[in-house]
Length: 436
Image (cartoon, rainbow, N blue to C red; front, top):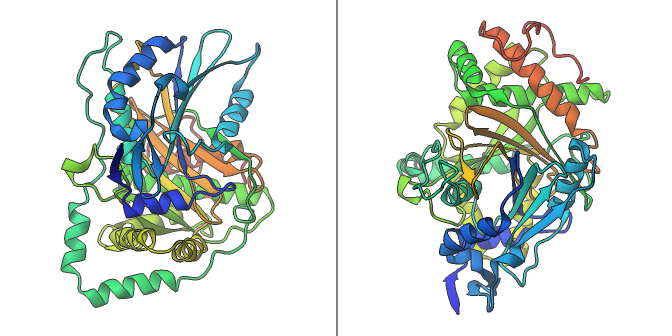
């Protein structure tokens, strides 16, 4: 049966899919015990399949029901070999990230990677055309519980700002000012060539950081007079600077794209893509954490008053509704303006349970488009923050060095505010050293 028509922005993300840059959002849940897969499948049938999109495939321009759909076909169980360690797990997840979803089936799949000792990692892959990260977080909450017994109503995530303010800003701005904003964006110079940009391959790598207490990041943000996002963005910039220095490169200023939710409160659980992009200059060329933080805070404050996110969303609507060549042109132009995607999605504030087991950690990785081969994801869950990296293997072969540098930069920023994150000893007034 033919269902809902594919939205123009969703269609754009579907057509952007390439073998060397697949448009899939990957989430990872970890558990300290084996998962009851029969119970997991029942939970998916009761809750996930209540959303028609998860039992439909794309045919032409519409979502179409898959005849004989069986949720078991989308849940895979893999037992890892004895002695499986973090490096093996990272390689297995990287291989899944690199593997395309079958377009003849609904565009999602779960893979349970079980260690011989029972610890389990659940890898969820969903095509971007199904929904953006904000929508899929609401879907995740909808299949989890607040207790092992289950049966409770899902709690809310820490909501990103709704899209109402962005819409009001665009409607109050003159057409001429909005056109100038878009022209300035399109006229921005191409990104300098660093080891973070280049031809892409078919193999991807993923990595994730140890947890950082969210309370300590909030304390640093309060002490510096900014937001948690300001602190995390400055730490990302410093980590990338250290990484380039470690490889003998002089770090230039680099630009990233940052997804911004445009959803009204009433739309938080709707599938599809309702987000725009803003372009943020990361001051990797500034030597000290203090200088980088100040520069980033100024830029983030300016973007909060800009209609840029909604303008880029409207551009995606236009290209998704037009011919494929127009979309390819827009992706090439915009992809040349950025070196990476950086996204921050707030997750549940309290521990959640799935199929009776407590979710120990949640991580995710975002897709990139065009020539962009580096994705940086910041995620908070149950009072902890983690940084995730998804990189093209041709560009970044040692993403763990970036993660180590991220922790060092958080310590230096904490020193600016007189707080302590992790171990002490970082001098915020000194230039950031290379990553170790």
